[in-house]
Length: 279
Image (cartoon, rainbow, N blue to C red; front, side, top):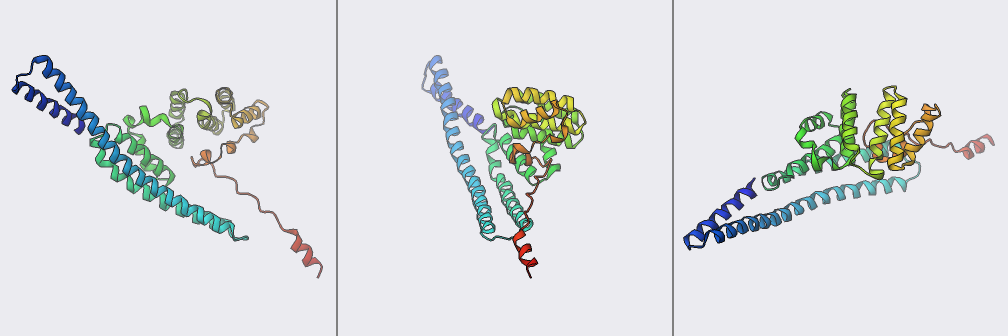
């Protein structure tokens, strides 16, 4: 990494200068170590400043795109009787454009990999999330295949663990999904773990294993206190598997693309019908 190399050169130059000016051995070592760490700190500050600027530009792209989506939603809501299917398609199209722009922009962070040890993981994390949202699952699997990318800070977000479990499930590797769940769920506290318990119980239900799903939900409701997990546990405990649903987890659940949200039923306007029958 360049920061370490430059710091070592700085320490070496300092040591050479100390020897040239006949500084004692203890002083030479002390000044060299000080030069090394001061150079590291200075580089870290400058690199972080530049990274922050690029990240702010990326956030601006996301904010601008979200504002466009919000304006379209307001426009559709101001026109009663509009086509909800068309509206959904247009909103999905806008979101896709926004995510593609953000994905392409991550290339601007690549040069910082030489200066920051964790930048490679951070870039992989962002690309993983964007690619999953775009349903580019082949590329998602390629990132997940790099095990070194999925240790430490990268897995500090439960949604990333959920993505990994989803891909293992979709690739029919249920055992791997269960291992991923057990390995990571213990590190999340409170409601942060709800999505993972909900997902693992859903996988068990899809595998025709309601007893295992109930055990997962029992632990999940105790750890998180989440109402959705509690309700599902009650349904399975009362042999009412048909009522099992993770819909209550909301957008966080549907963002995994395992299920589609149920569209609201349109109510029929009966007033016009009555009026028509009067003639």
